[in-house]
Image 1 (tube, rainbow, N blue to C red):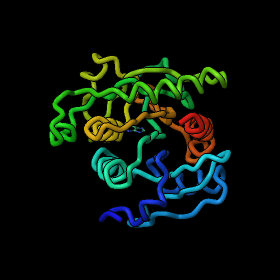
Image 2 (image 1 turned 180 degrees about the vertical axis):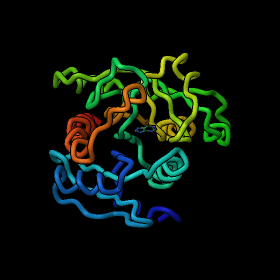
Image 3 (image 1 turned 60 degrees about the vertical axis):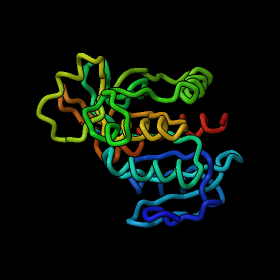
Length: 231
Ligand code: HPA
């Protein structure tokens, strides 16, 4: 066990799917997994381990922001010997080319967070693990799903005043957790990827309702689960 995760080592799979929201972790376990059990409830950051089509997987929430994702993914990789983490979350669109409900597979995450600097990683951008993105891409192609590939902005400030710098880096959307996840994967020699659903638009101000959010994430959950089968 760690300070933040109350699970035994053997209770967590090598493969973890991480939504931000603990309720979403519960929803995934209840709706998609068989023979699942609760493996963490410290701070209500729900985690479950069970089976999807016979593959043992863990679904655990990351909470919001690089700080929270940083803690949980570090401990999963470092203390629980997890090899793969796929973040599934929502993002805000920076371009009208992206519509509500669209899926994004992240190539690179750009950020001015200090998260990487504090671990000796000094770049303002970091890539998802190429091998893991390749597996997800294969799943996309095999299932004929529409997914946009692109760079995203990972902000520490939800109520950001100015994101124009990130448009210059080709960022098509914004979220808050991928940079810490990718940095941990890099410094600990592990694998991480991030799949996002567009939940709002910073251009038009449109937003999904909570009910639409729940339904829309099913496509993303399916993609993550079916990708995991190949790991
Ligand atoms: N900003 C940051 N993170 C987000 C947003 C946003 O607009 N939408 C979903 N996650």
